[in-house]
Image (tube, rainbow, N blue to C red; front, side, top):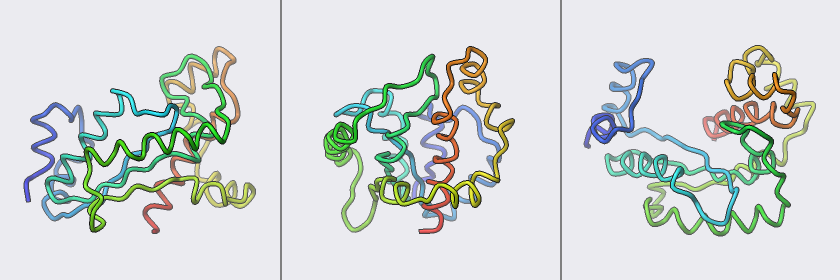
Length: 183
């Protein structure tokens, strides 16, 4: 198994690592399962998505198992990161059309045969959440102060253009991690 961390560093994917020794041990112990999310904001992936897809592909080539999370659920909110204003809300039919378009693009980069990689849609678990249960079980672990540490959140809040829906995006992303860890 190739050391994927060295490959990613050599190719310019790594800017900083909080616990490099721990990550190196985990990569060498492997195989790891890792994931990245992609929201269906258009019928096609864009060049910005390619960095994440190629990182998943390099990890797979090194013997690890990537999960591409296509955000049918998070896409209904819209990622506020790096945005000066709220994303336009997409109609559910438009999200489904976009999901169909991007699903087929992943197979060019990842091998999904024999569960070597997975593609999952977070709408499968997010849309069934009960709001009060979610707040009690997940939301209570976050403070507004923690959420406001995100640069985009803070900047948009200060200009008065940050919605309650967008504030919840980080919680929903955290729930994706919890769900994937459990399943």
